[in-house]
Image 1 (cartoon, one colour):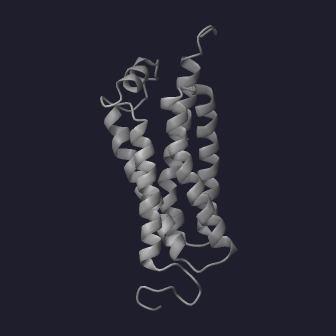
Image 2 (cartoon, rainbow, N blue to C red; image 1 turned 90 degrees about the horizontal axis):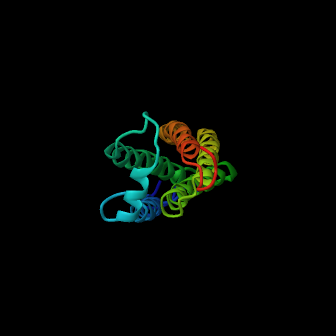
Image 3 (cartoon, one colour; image 1 turned 120 degrees about the vertical axis):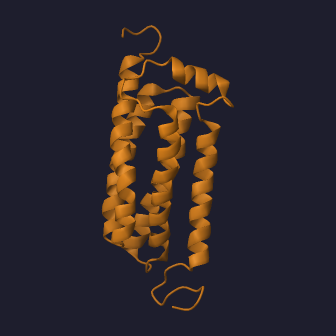
Length: 177
């Protein structure tokens, strides 16, 4: 492989793969920050903390620690995929990586900003399925990329259960509990 260049099979140069991953992670962080239930967003914070949440809901700092770690691992997987030789399997895995990264921000918008509990629970389930499909697709290209996606799929399993339980406990106004 040439220094800083692509390999003969067409993987992206390290700098290009790194720039793409950094852009995706930064965009996700900005969207997540925009929708976060914290003192800088008092209306979102008040609404979220008034929800009837299950006893297994982690404390707020856990979410603040888990999501960056999960997204960083997902970014590492994306980097490895972008550096892998070009081909249909690599392109499919990269597309799924990007789709899953976008869905993270979309979910925060749906749940926190728009307060759509039912659709956000459905979206969490779709993300779980998408995460599993991503891991399987990544495994066909790069084992380490697939392994880096496992925390994402695992956390989504829990997050889907949590989102569904919050939806169940907080029916829209006018509906029976």
